[in-house]
Amino acid sequence: MLIALAVVVTIVAVVFTFQRKLVYFPSPGPLPSADEVLPGGRDVRLVTADGLMLDGWHFELPDAPVTVVVFPGNGGNREGRVSLARALTSRGLSVLLFDYRGYGGNPGLPSEEGLTFDARAALDLIDGPVVYFGESLGAAVAAELATFRAPKGMVLRSPFTSLAAAGSHHYPWLPVKMLLQDKYPVVERVSSLDVPTVVLLGTRDSIVPPAQSREVATAARARLIEIDGADHNDEVLLSGPQVIDAVLSVS
Image 1 (cartoon, rainbow, N blue to C red):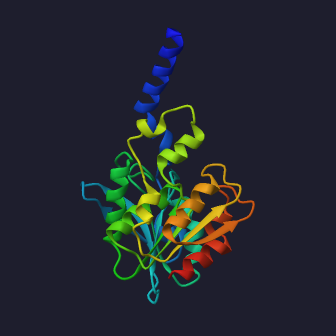
Image 2: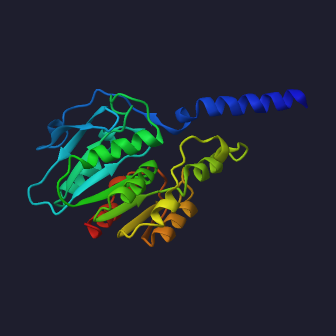
Image 3: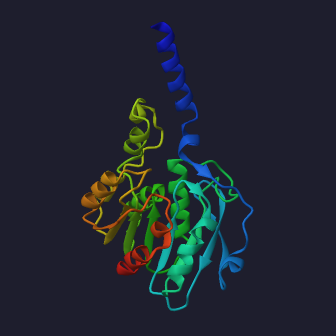
């Protein structure tokens, strides 16, 4: 009995200590320049409130009605979102792709507070109307930012209700809510917003339960689009036609 208890306590202590390594999976740089990725792209630098300088790519069209600011999920870097930028610019929208701290060769370590600073720094680069596109963890970042500065519209792709709820789904034997340092209370935040919002989900999402995304849609009073058979990281949920149409509908 004492040995079993000691094992549990040890596991909990390890998870608490290294929890952010279980949440954030950054891919490092170096990355190509923006104009190598898409013609006309421009390398930009974000300066955060806590003094970090983060790199991004701005694909700016002169007559675009809005700029779509893309808030990535917890893995990879901005290079993995190029297909989204390509699809949106081909439909006449400007796009800002950037990496959070610790991603894409950027300095710093990711955390909820840090990603909040990063998102607000991204807005400093944009003049004029914006649309937020948040994928998975990025949906939580976008929802928080919308409470600070409301966008013209918002698209949340595969959002969870809170990080604790998502974590509990994968680790039901751990006291996730008690252990987590980063909370990301998405439902709480979108409930207070008055922003035209679309929520997209894949019906076979193996990372974020579709029921959680539906709950976010209800709380946000959002239009819900369900992509039948799609899993969390399928390309159709990144730059498929339903995703692009959703962004256009709030632009």
